[in-house]
Length: 128
Image: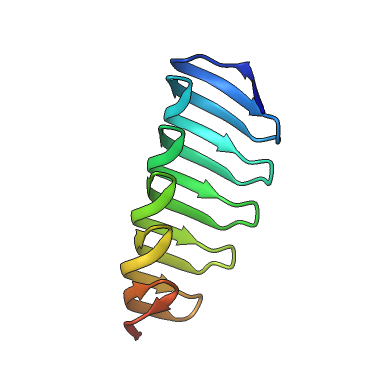
């Protein structure tokens, strides 16, 4: 069950969910739509665009552990171009499909760089 501190069918407002999550942003037809910020009780925060209650378009997702993703989402999933920065300093800059690394990308380890095509968690390119 969810309840609202301030909510509108259209426009901007705030939603506080029973589980402790909060949303501040734009609504359309009582759904998250447009720009907003969603904070999960776990400490993870998404700031960016929403469509029909889901992450959609450009946004930034930052986990409590320090991992972050900045890039594109389609219907709540990482899709298209995005940069994932791990808490340890590793970075993946490349293509995503269905929430997974997929397509061309560059994975930069603290010391090693791998460039090539990604399939899931495996690089099929060369280490340079």
